[in-house]
Image (cartoon, rainbow over the protein chains, first blue to last red):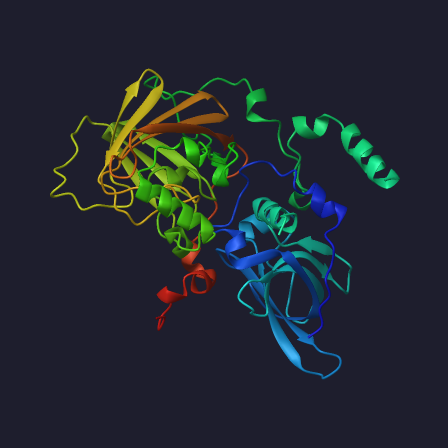
Length: 145
Length: 270
């Protein structure tokens, strides 16, 4: 699989100015994802689960060296939260080529909690976290250890 | 270093406006209204003159976000100021150290007690004077609701009452404040995601008021002598969202995370 580390941008830093008490996940972000480990994957969407408590989309990532395909699970916020930031249930469809930046799952699975999602065909950018999840992710990115 | 100084200077020059207003993050895509404190509309009232803690005739609006700094917009004292029994402090620390993976709410179970006022997707308060009951409807989890009896009844015999997530609540008005007294809780929920323990001995007193149109004051007194050495009180404010309704949300529709966070509870888990 291909992945590269990315450095959170100024935009992500500005996002910490989220209203207090904004919608949050029903469990702690930090329990499942490591905000200090940002990975970026590219590939084709194979499936979208537009459901509660979290949406998911799955991406087939091809290792250019070997041709091996790995399926990555990308967790996004609840549909109601995502629709406040421009998503609809049709924003991602199987076959869409995407670049996904996210926080790596702690348990070693090919899974991430998606931040920036870019649709390759149109360049459209979406953001996968609700405001409070992003605040937790940012706190993790900036934590000392 | 020059660049460092430049950045510090730039940060210092950042307008005061950033701290004074609560901007939506770029991802939100829509402007936030001014803070609740800027709205001066008075408390709405029912026909009998009591404060209306819920929607008016239009039916639009609900209590969504909280304004406190803790998860869900709640506010709690720092742990050193909470009169934990030693075992309860140890349990609180343990829950924190595990990043809250053991929270029953991960499995979409109901948010008992004050947890109902500090979870996503908000709540609605519906007063039905005709039958002397108040219903608090949660938008999240599995849309659980609780009932507050306003007919002056007593709490049932604890030997008979089956401990439950929401307990047995009786309420009365003290002026414009709804005072709710609840006993009969089970121990299958956390008071808040930060992990404050409680036992079946919990006697919860809630004082709920709507001092102006946009604000719900929510004050709790935790009286649980098995978990705490004395009763303690905290409070936070929830803000009315007048543009939206509670959406349909069922937490266990596709709850994949529970099998990651609480694998022992998965089918076939050890």
